[in-house]
View 1 (cartoon, rainbow, N blue to C red):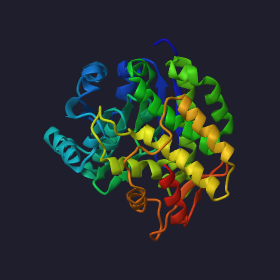
View 2 (spheres, rainbow, N blue to C red; view 1 turned 180 degrees about the vertical axis):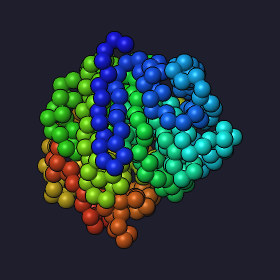
View 3 (cartoon, helix red, strand yellow; view 1 turned 60 degrees about the vertical axis):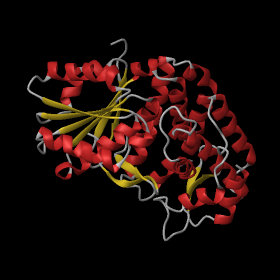
View 4 (cartoon, helix red, strand yellow; view 1 turned 90 degrees about the vertical axis):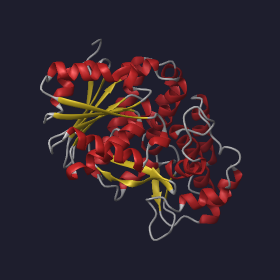
Length: 369
């Protein structure tokens, strides 16, 4: 390996480490250390599997020859994060004869990680899951923290469980072949960490955005590690999202509503992916904060400019109805007693959870796009 991997420790009741560095998918010893039993289900999608699955399997078996390894593949894209594919993963574990010391390896982006984690949470009431994220977005967001879920027609992530991984192994070398659109989607989540609680990190992102977009290894490793440190600290303090952890959803209530309204479209269409929807959602949350007198409009402009410089959308796609988006927002898991509870801010680096948000103000921001 060309550089020593960074390690971010996540504490709490079920502590684990996040390993960040190039070449880690080929480190069989590292992979094997996270597996306690003999049954392994490698869950991936039809885009990632042809690139990396055989190598991961070979490295693992070389380090631990006695393993019984099965595979379960899904079509790439958010449209695959379904109860149907969850059942397929469960059936694959059953066919493997997976015992309670089995492990599910999630090799892919956030869809694979969420689905694999949920299957691991439910098989025999919980077996190990090791996250092997292959997108920037998954490395800094969905692979960390143990939130697992699938989507249903009524909304994203409404069926799921909290299930911390045994380990997260993020091989930054895979980002060299990541499509630019997916790289930008990951940058949206990285910008989120600066926007919600670290103005200095936000300013560093402003200065280093060209290096990040160019795929500079050092810049990406630093951005990933800093983002994971932020999320790890918050998750450790609030593992079940009873309070502070909700801050990590800055932009997500708006963004999830857009994704739901667009029907979780298949890859290659014009629908926004998760990172793009979050980028739009953050701008909407900032605009609502300004409209409510919580923050200066200038901070919204600064956020919008950075996201646009990263090649991300900052407005609601045409054709989406504001009333329908608001209806989807009412189903958000953060809401209490049917009242909107949103993550807003008082400027860059100062997000907070705001209960009982006026729906009329939200609707006006949605109508403005």
